[in-house]
Structures are given as C-alpha cells and as structure tokens.
Figure 1 (tube, one colour):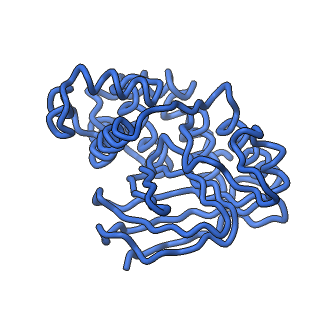
Figure 2 (cartoon, helix red, strand yellow; figure 1 turned 120 degrees about the vertical axis):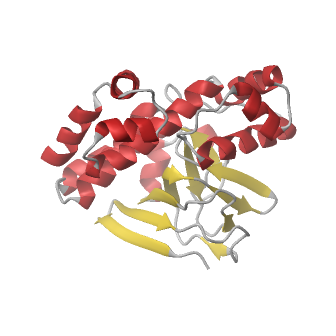
Length: 276
C-alpha cells in the first residue's frame, strides 16, 4: 500500500484544507475508495493517475482534479518519486456560487461534470502561498479562507482556465506526454526525444499538445519546473543549485522565468512566505 501523510492545515465551517503526500510506491491501481465529500485537489509535486470507471486523469501541477462526493475512484503511480497535493473541501452551497453552471452536473448533489480542469500560474502561486503560510502558522484563518476562495474562483473562472475539447486518442497522447514531463521536470528534453518516447512525429506532437492544453509544449514544461520551484522555495537556501537542478541554465535564467510567470523573483517569494 502507498504511504500517505495527511496534514490538516485548516478546518473551519466553510472549508477544510489538507496537505496530502504519497510515497507513490505502488505502480498498480490501489483498491477502490469513495470520496466522503467534494474535494478540489491541487497537485503541486510529482504526478499520479486517477481512475474513475473507465476514465483516467493525469494529476500534476498544471491541473485541478475534482473528487466528487460518493464517487468511487482508484489511484496509480506510473511515475516514481511520489506526489503532493493540496486538497480543499468546501461547503457545496459555496461551490454552487463559485462554479459556472455549465461545469456542474444536474441534480440536487453538487458534482462537477469533468474530472479535471487546467489552472494558470497565478492559481499555482496561490496554492503555494496557502500551503507554506498555513504550514508555518503565519496566516490567519480569515486570510486563508479568503485566499482559498480566491483560488477556487480563479480556477473555475472562464477568463483564467479553459476547457479544451479533443478526441480520445489525442487526449491519451497528451496524457502520455504529461507523465513523461512530470517524471523529471528538470530534464532538458529535445522535441525529437519527447516525440520518440510517445510514438508520434514532432510536428504532430506540438500541434496536438498546443490544441489540447492551450499552451506550447515548452511552456507547459516550464510551468512544471516553476511549480516545483514553488514547492521547494520555502526551505531552499541555495537558489543557484535549485535553478540548476530544475534544468535552468543559470540563476538569472531561473529568476527571469519565475518573475515573468509569477510577478515576483524567487527571493521575493521566499521573503513573502516567511514574513507571512
């Protein structure tokens, strides 16, 4: 069985927030479980596969994964190294206020139609701020609740996150590519090497991936690298080594990419987390 470490970060009448880390030792599907409440799960480290019936979802740092109440699911770990997620359970009445109607299934229960939804870099930054701030006891309850609802609103809002229709075959191709990138975010891939691993031509891969995800392949990998940086910056003492470990050519390259995506430098993010 996979070793889970669950840390409760916040518990109020409005929502609960947990940090969930899994060793990812088991490559095969876990026994089926059933979600006891609606959870919005934000992976921030590694990757795993979630199985609901015949459907599969790649859960990694560019995705929000929906765990509907009373929905049976299983988990597998085709990528080694384990994973970490921020799980938020919210009052269903609030979800109905926050979520556009076309994202929710019809009926009395509050359930999302789709299994997952892409998120943007600002949402990733909010995930990191919540996790680091609450873990250090440096964030008051009201602030944490407000940030959590802002995160959910941003994740579900049509202006910052978009559903993109694609065929089943193309979706599986994109999923294989995501797993490949998530297995080693710091690896300096070439397009030909990725295409060879997933079994298509480089031209076809770039076209399908951009159509499915709305961003170029290289940009998607950059987001994975910087999401990993958000995870590690709270305890990092050597930014140059972190930059090199994540595949950046230099400290300045890392800082420039981080600032462009998140609006502040890695050092400024560290200070914000520690001051909070």
